[in-house]
Image (cartoon, rainbow, N blue to C red):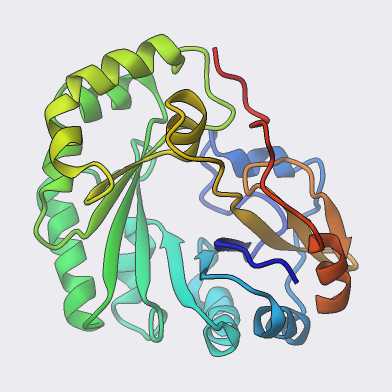
Length: 274
């Protein structure tokens, strides 16, 4: 069976309950109905037999729904388990055991979530590390609007986030598909403004979006971040987490193995470079 790098898992088959208007999950609405949940024995079997380095679980459900699913994933996973969630949910999780056995927490930082100012982010990251020693905290800073992009790049917010002591890494994330304003010209100007920070921290504490690094700048190939989500009849598989439609719906590990036989990341990104 093909070995993957990062395997993304979305607990819901439809857009999450946070409901960011710009999120790639919104495009899944037409292809997968809401209300589906993983059949956990099937998912556990897949995770126990599939080859991967990291399992990245998107958690936006109410904690009472997410925790038993995440516990099953942690128990079955054979690599690093990462949880991507909102700062608000991460703060609520401090009172429970949601992140037990998790190696990394990715916190979504954008104008929709509200918690973006460095002191508040630092306090939360430090609290998470105190609650779960050894936990890595990563920020996913998303360019969700021209206004927030300006705050990140021109007003110094990105550099301030990168330099927070309790934060291990920051990923600068572009929307997929890229909006018209976030084109090649914008990125070239932004990277010029960030030159000092990039020289100091690129691929150390600051990481660029796959679309930018692989397609715009030609720094390596597509990482091929595959994705599993629940669907009627089994597991929905996407070769790219950002794809609106699933490539296949499989009933278990054997069928997924046949789908992955010879599978490779796409030679061309499905998102345009303007």
